[in-house]
Length: 214
Image 1 (cartoon, helix red, strand yellow):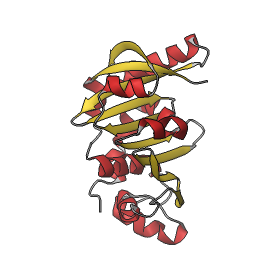
Image 2 (cartoon, helix red, strand yellow):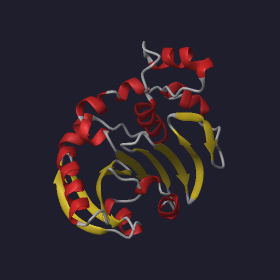
Image 3 (cartoon, one colour):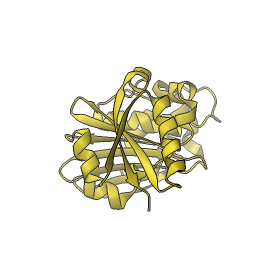
Image 4 (cartoon, one colour):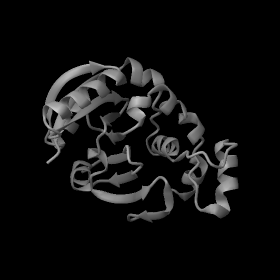
């Protein structure tokens, strides 16, 4: 069972409110940023330092392209590449993500401004698990139940009869608090061993690119 829980990621919304409104975080094993960008048929964009600059550039690009291009900000973390998309969704779009996961592990989670969310775990073009973090009882993929213990440990809530237990595990005193987004970060860390930290988001100079949205 994962030792990282949703409470380890509650800082994300507090420290990065603009990014937390709508984002997609993806971790890909064994590919460098340039290789990942090539798999996604993207084009290079100027490098940017810090998440705030990435968010601003993403919205500037969306306006300049009339919504036709999505910014990708990437950095290497050990053997993994972290891909961040402000107000994006490439990482959970299966017709792009699954082919791009060939020969590797792909872990992605997404939230948009309307409250829609998704979590995708793929291995070598195969969807192992897909679910909505806010509704983890409904799961799809070739191994939809393999991570159930880790999901409980991370703090996902599985129906009214288990709310109290999950709150205790996640260290949350308010049963009305929605911890599905930080729980998705915790589950991604369980699958990858990569911890996303405030310092990583604030200090990194990201390799950037963009992909078409149409």
